[in-house]
Length: 206
Figure (tube, rainbow, N blue to C red):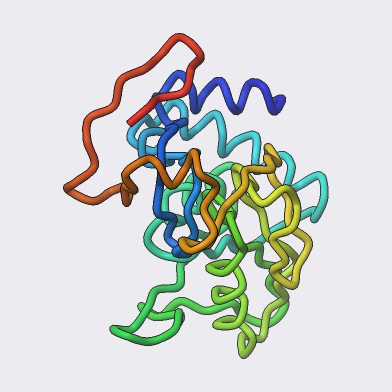
């Protein structure tokens, strides 16, 4: 699947949003990738994750386990694992604490694992996921995501693969460009998020 085909899936699902968004990292951006609009449609999810599995196999070879950070990484992690013929597990946060493996999940000695994310912005959740796996006997060979919106600058401590790499600026809240500061900020996924409309350019504006 080409980068243009991947982005077409996001556009067709209304998952490319334009406005003033508060990202999970706390940074602000004029573009938000609403991945849940993709994951609510199993055929789109299947196509994207099948393509990601092919990229993972081409780079890392046989993978036994896919591990993802909850909650956002669970769906793409599971679907990518299905195409890899691998086991799908996830890390989750204890209340107020770091990511950890629970529910009897583990990466046994001799097993090769890859971290699968949905969207990488700063790489923070992938780094935290990796940190939580340091004591596991198995090998963490790399990481992969559907879209890397950091322009390739999201350092996580492992090779990071993606279907698309975009360079979408993200700003601290006290250093916004004037055109972004002029728009009211929206935290995607919150109840305050207004309904979107789709203009002709394929971006959905809120």
